[in-house]
Amino acid sequence: MPVLKDNYTPPGIFKNADVSTIYSAKLRKVEMPVYERERIELSDGDFIDLDWSYSRSFESDNLVILLHGLAGDTGRPYMRGMAKAFNLKNWDALAMNFRGCSEELNRLYRSYHGGASDDLAEVITHVLSLKKYRRIMLVGFSLGGNMMLKYLGENRSRPDEILGGVGISVPCDLAGSLGAINRMRNFVYSKRFELNLKQHLYERAKKFPDRLDRKQISACSSLRDIDDLYTSKAHGYNNAADYYEKASALNFLPGIKKPTLIINAANDSFLSKKCYPRDIAERSDNLFLEIPQYGGHVGFVTSGDIFYHEQRATEFMESLL
Image (cartoon, rainbow, N blue to C red):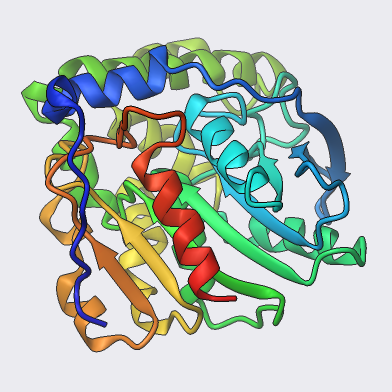
């Protein structure tokens, strides 16, 4: 499909990438009912906590599954905002906390990473076991968008109920995106990610002292160090480079058979050049790529309650019905 033209023009100050990124992540307030929490057991003995937000009708047979980003959870404004946008369209929303991202540390040494598509597959299997939903949309943000795109492009069976997916601010080239976020202009962002992830690892080290210790964690001075120490090894990869190569959604985009939209802002400082896969989209029957000039990282602010990427996600869903 050709690269789509956008019509996104943010309010004045939000043309600045950092302002839109920070406001959307830290300052935005989304008014919606409290989630209903459900814990599901996974096939390997671990668990995942799911947070449900229901449409006003309470009888919807349509569901959107939401996947958060690195060091995120279901309480983030971007997750709540998208759930609200779909609820207003009479779609139920299931917001997925990745392993270890809800209030309780998960049971196993492993947790989550950008390629953990098997966890998404188990959540979808659980949803289908409820025998309620005829249509399912997937929406992934940042690292969760990479996971979603990988799932949709892998050589695996996918249920017919899945209509398609939308990825927002997706670092589909993990190695390139790491290089982008490590640039000096992103120092504050990368340091916040690093400190957040190290705090999680300190908690994990208490539970698994024979596999991880505080000195090793404290010695990490970058996100790549953390991926070399923990993320790669805990999830079956040789090292960080091996993880980035094998888990990047870029490798799986040509295999996508369900209609899928990627919205990556041109001024997103977290993304590398390869995170804008124009050539793949132009050759694909199912991959749509939209590159708004503005938006930063998951920061598509509008003057209303529903942000631009939320409008586009629900519009894309409606185009598939």
